Image (cartoon, rainbow, N blue to C red):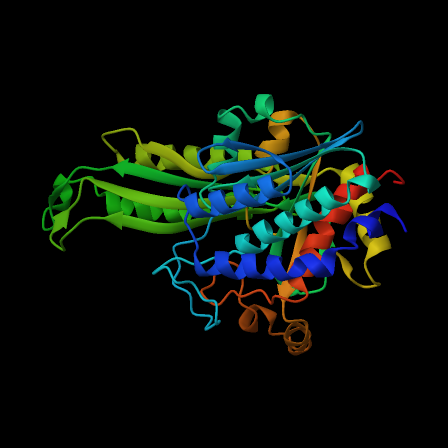
Length: 410
């Protein structure tokens, strides 16, 4: 029996409590920076497995299994839920008003705990150090940095490689990997532009910030279409434009809320510079009496998988799982803050996608060409990964990825 098979031998026995743990988390979700109960339950489990437990970044939890000489592998799961009212109708639906695990972080926590238990029980098959890290506040892009700021790199053994997975609306029973960008960098930006207020009947006495903001919105459409090289990916969305309170009052300011996504740090830098240049230019053209203000928030780093790590893990997946289970991932426009953790240590990483949707329904939607209409995506109030085989595959993926580095016969 190989090291992989030896560690996974107890999978069926452990899946019972993994399912129970998952449904409990789904019933009792906690939003970013409030994961107190989740954190406590995770710490209790890790301690029971024999892990050395450390609390970091408020509600973050790290469990370390030390098992002789060898590589050190860090596996990460995020824990927070979203301020979304659940509409799935599941028997284990959220019992917290206005909060649900609409992004599948309950899957991530449960499967990583399952993997940690199997790794703890299967020590004879591997050598080195296994780190199970449970991160808060991914949804607001703050949790990984909070753990880093709280001393992660000095309080936890330095890994040689970092791993993470995310459940997605693809067929359960499949995994998807890719080298290079897999999730976009994300930036939210609040822009305030200033005018000169006046009576609505006296526009000649005003500098109208509504017209100014409207000009900015139109001009921003050229950032992608005329300033970004064809083939380079970028999204610039103006999600809100707010100004004024009454029809006959020209206000003295307007605010715009933007969201920007990119697959390249250089493109990101260029797009943000173009936005600021356009805003400043339009303000000068309009005769704005005050410089515009730029407030960046909810910023997420690029998630770009290391080629060598991805090849090694993908090869292990391909050897372990049945034919057709390992797919080529398409880069996603969603964003994550996972990469701040391996970046803080200066180590390579890979991040893969875990299928969570009912396989038959997914295949039928693919055949109809209606996936985007029929398959609820992450953050939807209808997002509901199927328990089987999602949880089993998620546990296996974490074990196989870690064992590709730690197995004695690797």
